[in-house]
Image 1 (cartoon, each protein chain N blue to C red):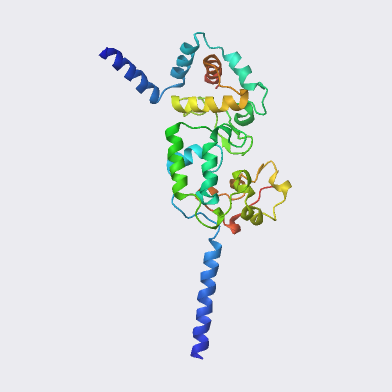
Image 2: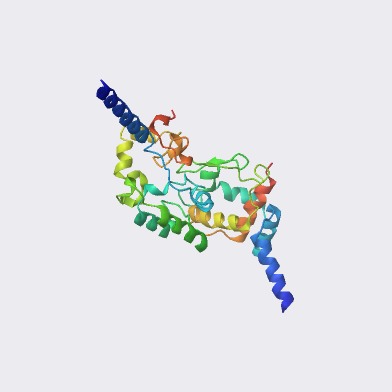
Length: 126
Length: 156
């Protein structure tokens, strides 16, 4: 019982603290129960999903460069970890932005598989 | 002679006082916002000075973050409460917060429209500006509360 508690505590602590993009990807892959597909991620990122905005509206066509917010024009830093080492290192922040931005782009939250695909693609970019 | 001199000095003093106070009248000089405000509100737009809206407007903005001017800006409860508390403590101070503008948009306030009456709709729509909400396009140091008229540079 106690060991179960400590395993849970460790899990929660690891989730709250700094992570690497590869760890976050592994988390989404295990949640979805299927392997990540980077090329599907690229298609998903560049596609329109029936709303005014798509991922590229703010993040730009190239995630190694960055973009500008579609309505406020605020500069948005590069999303690819190779270009911006701060990206995908904080689980809570990543989850917050997936939740919000998926609702803007798809009018629903993204599935773990979709997050895994996009992140897998972003990790391949150099 | 003496009285003329002292009269002149007094006039000079009043004039210099007026010029100093008017030239600083457009900037925000209230307490600095907490990091959470700059971080959360400032990731998509300028972390607007809290004196630009009355408290009731800030309250409505904070209660509708999931539908925030066309975008989902929802926060976790703890973060939302922190920002809400700060805005209710420091928001709505001074002359800019006397009215609740339509849709609680700072840019729809009467004072905002008056201050920007020389800026045409076409200018606001320039690719380098996009929207009246993009303060930093023309007020370069808006992030530090600097909205002084003589430092405005309107990009082409």
